[in-house]
Image (tube, rainbow, N blue to C red; front, side):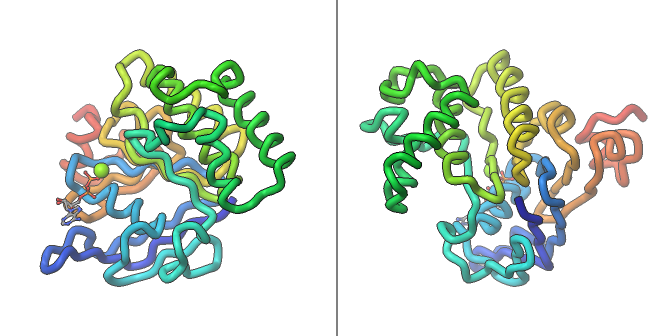
Amino acid sequence: MATVTVRDVVKKYGELKVIHGINLSIAEGSFVVLLGPSGCGKSTLLRMIAGLEPISEGDVLIGDRVVNDVHPKDRNIAMVFQNYALYAHMTVRENMSFALDLRKAPKDEIERKIAWAASILNLEPYLDRYPKQLSGGQRQRVAMGRAIVRNPEVFLFDEPLSNLDAKLRVQMRTEIKELHQRLKTTTIYVTHDQIEAMTMADKIVIMRNGYIEQAGSPLEVYDNPDNLFVAEFIGSPS
Ligand code: ADP
Ligand code: MG
């Protein structure tokens, strides 16, 4: 577990500024949701935290360490994407062990980690199947399994449920929250879905056009929206 701090972070694509000096501090072990309409900069901010996108100005810190120049694999972060990004030609077991194999972890440790992840995520019956033999929810669980076997200090999710049908989305919300309650890993979760944000977050960060409009608990932003945009976006009663 670790805190994540974003300090005066700016992102420019050429002349176009898409993140305008954002400040954010994320408590150790908390579940923070970045919420905002499509194109507001959620994924860009998440990718800068992950180290997958260079920062134009400012700093990202994990714990006390400025990680601007730290390679993604050395940030102790795991990211789960909307499209799962599983390897089609590998079994569930191989998908989950891949990162550990690369790190040359001992075989028995790899087996132990995979057994642990499979039991938490109810993947035990599927370890020898290939991704195409799994449902959408099962694939998303494999993506989470692949992330947790690395014992990351921080989890990043970018719209992980967008490709699932409505019923499964609701079920997976609960599963992701249960996973968080169990592991207490600091989590940053991106979505454009207000209900998902309200039901999952300890703290919601509402973004628009590369700025943070408001940050607070779901109740705070619902009951006391700072401006009309937040009120309308969250759907507060007026
Ligand atoms: P969100 O995830 O909230 O939908 P993004 O972070 O994907 O938003 O995008 C924020 C803004 O940055 C958008 O205007 C988008 O068009 C722009 N953008 C994202 N990636 C690039 C890129 N690689 N080059 C140029 N503009 C980009
Ligand atoms: Mg996005």
